[in-house]
Image (cartoon, rainbow, N blue to C red; front, top):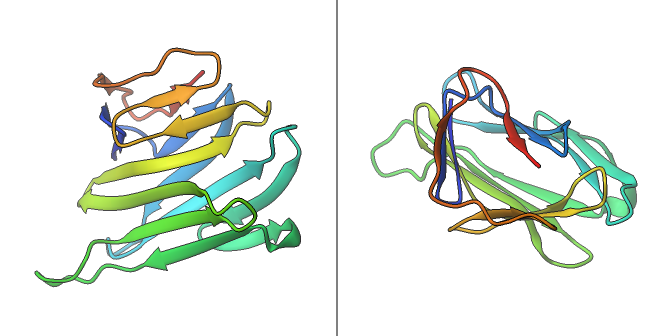
Length: 151
């Protein structure tokens, strides 16, 4: 699967994002390509593990802090593509917004999430930036079936 993260293109990824050395997010396409599946660990700014979603189903979500909205795509010319949006209900910020742009490409449009270390990863339509690191934009990488490593 190819991942577009902001303006960065990651070819041949496993769909896994490793943030600060830990697998934190996995994006998968459903069997018929009509659904985008998310598996993700969510942390707060202190690094406390606050929630876990596994293939779009909450394993736990303390204080119902996060809300996941799924839009299934249909195999129709005029239907919108599969997408998902994850919102922090306390701050009303978008934690993650992603959509399928073709059969093997997922575009992460925006996001703001904490790594297990508490550092903030920000994704905009133009770049990704981990707190304390330079912004990454306009890169094209082939990870040969491996994860995308940030930080």
